[in-house]
Structure formats: C-alpha cells, structure tokens
Length: 114
Length: 398
Image (cartoon, rainbow over all chains, first blue to last red; front, side):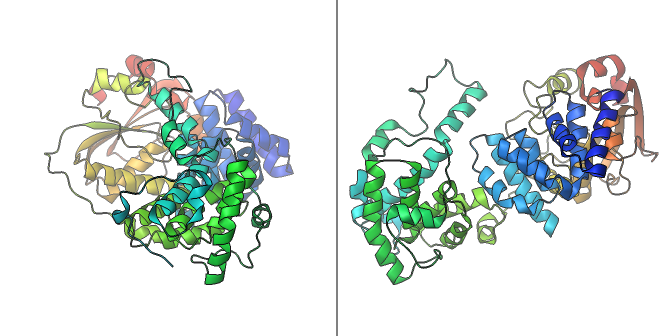
C-alpha cells in the first residue's frame, strides 16, 4: 500500500464520518477484501475508529456475507452488542474461520462489557 | 419429569422414522428422537459440507473424494434412523408460525422445564409433527417438530431440540435457558449435549463455567528451546505465518531458527483490533507457553502481535528474545516486562502507514529495546517478508 491508497482511505473515512456519506463507508468495507494486507488493515482500523457509526455498515456486510472473518471481528471490536444474536448464529457457520471469529467477537464483546 | 442415566441405555437401538416419536419415556425412543432433532440441526447447518471442505483443505486425502464418497454422517446410520433428505440452509420463522405448522398453540414461551400441561400437549403434538416431517421434510416441518420438542417431557430431547432451534427460529434466545439447565443435568449425555450446544452460541454463559474450570497440568518435560511466530491484527487466517507452508514461517524455520514451533496446536489469537482482543490474546499466550512448558522461548511478533507478546510477558511469560516486527508503540500501555525478557529487538520500516493509521508511535525510545529501521518505506508487511529479511536483516542483529 502506497501513500496514495492510504490518503484515499483517509478521504473515505472523512467523507463517511464528517458528512455521513454511507457509500464512502461501504468503500471502506469493500477495501477489507483487498489482497493488499496494509490496505485491508488500515480500512479495518478506520472502520473500528468509526465506533458505533460503523454498526450499520458491519450489520449490512454480515447480512451479505462480505469479508466475513474480518467483519465479524470488527463487530466485536466496536462493541456492537446489537449484533450479538447475529454473531451467535455465525458461531454455527459452516465456514470454520467465520465460526471461530464469531466466537472471538462474542468473547471480545463480553470482555469489553466487564 | 423423567430423568434417566443414559449410561444404562447402551443397548438402545435406533427406531426409524415417525415410530421413534410414539413413546416419550422408553430409552431407545428418547435417544432416537434426540438424534433426529440433532440431525435436523446438522443438516440445516450444512455440517457435512463443512467437514468435507475442511478435510479437502487439509490436503490429507490421497485422492479427490467425490460428494457421494464423503459423508460426515454415514448414510447407513441415517438410513437406520430413517432420516429423510433435508436441504441445507436456514429459513428462520417466528415461534407462532412454527406452532401453526405443528397444529398446536402453547400459551407461553418454553421455559427450562415444561409444565405438566405443556408436556402433555407436546407429547400429543409430537406424533403429528413427526409424521408431517417424515411425510414432507422441509424447513417448516423440521422447525415445527423442533418447536414442539422444546416442551418434551424428557430433558435430553428438549436439549437436542434447543440445540437445533437456532437454525429454525427467528428468536432462538429462549432455547438458551433450556441448554443452560441441561448443562447442569446429572446425566452425562444430556449434560454434554447441552454444554456443547451452549458453547457454540454463548461461549461465556455462566452455566458453562463449572465445566470450563481450568485444571492446568504443568508439563513434566524439561523446558525446550524454541521460538514462536505471533500474528498481528486480522491476520489469524493469513498464510505467511502458518506452519508449515507460510513463507515467513519457512524462512525463519530454515534460515534463522530450526526450533521454530510448527505443530498443529501452535498459538493463535483472535487478531481483533481492540484493547479487549489484545488482552485476551496476551492471557492466552501466557497460558499456552505455561501449558507447553516453553518458558524462555523466543517470540517473533508482527504488528499488534507484539502488543500481545508484551502483555504475555507482563502476565508471567519468560521470554529469551522478543523480536517485534513493525510493532506500533503504545507506551506504557504495551511494554515488555523487562525483568522477564532477556532481549527486545524491534525491526520496522520507515513511516509505516498502518502504524500511522493505528495512531501508534513509529519507534521505541527505551534504550532497553534495540531498534532497527530497514531501508524500506511505508509497507507494514515488509517486516515479515522473507526477501526483506534476506536483503536487509543481518542475523547478527538477533
């Protein structure tokens, strides 16, 4: 990931958080599927930094099964208690990576609440 | 309500089809009902597909296995139980809709134990629901059978129904109370089925705590000299660190330390991007090192895997060399316990963009940490790239 991509991700984050541009938020979610590890990681970090604002985007991505292992963990990281029942369903997901991530997300949620 | 110890029912035989649901007390009938209800969950969840995918992915098969050849549940067993074909997938319905399909109406949501009246009504409705399911196996008829079985007089059957309820009901939370009670049952079979199902959906449920109490047994082996890779944020499934084929794992194993840990039970953490996720990771790493009796090991830790390693050292893990790769600096939140770490070596690139996004510092300033900055820029992943190591990391640094 070069500086241009980095700047673009930050621009998307600003559009999303400052003026509520949801499509910019969705573009960050899409970046979670990048083959570029750095781009993926920064996009995820920016979403987590969005906190509760990221909840609808994460819920939408879970519903569409987009980039599931990462998105599921992000749900835990942002403390999305409203998605707990979805996470519980995902603990039984046929994809073992998704099921494991859902377990971890629930554990993170519980730890965060204590 | 009937309570039986299924240790005495080892001679039970499967009862096929709807006949299994004609008796709610006989052990063979009860076990066949419980098996049928659990199979409903397994089929809807697609367990067979998932197991096949895992086996294929493991590369442990000598030749490709066709769908017909590979069955997680032997077809002969399914046939003995008369279990019908049921499509994979979930269609979750409200409880009232499931009761309508079953032709029954319960006044209240199911509690952990049914009232006498509920159990009587359920017993009568069970036959009808089972007949409908075997006549036309669908998500609706399967869901209706599971809904009715939640009020079954026998706890094992209630637990089996609750385990599958998450796949058929829009609001499965009521099943948790049934599983929680089942996890305390004196009958080991009921207890284990309940605890396993509960752990899948609510791993931190208090009912599981007595079953999860750690009884750590320290290994009696002599400590061995080894090292371990610790991945960073969202990298749990990344290929580079996975033994035995990950490129960085191979590089370290071949060129740096032949004792690099590579067994299947290697350490991993969630990779979550939160303080809680790292705290859990640090605790787990400490427990993992104690259980494996590997005190004094070397840790190669990337990104926030370094934070996890530092937390583990604070929790008590003795480390010989802690090699931090592109580790964001959050001092003093994450710092090594210097009295438990022999050497700390940090290797990173210039102006790491991921660390910039993380908000962490780009370098350590504590003189007890040996800081090495590679002549490379921006890329967070370059510090676990074998080519970067070959060209820019003299082994004398370590």
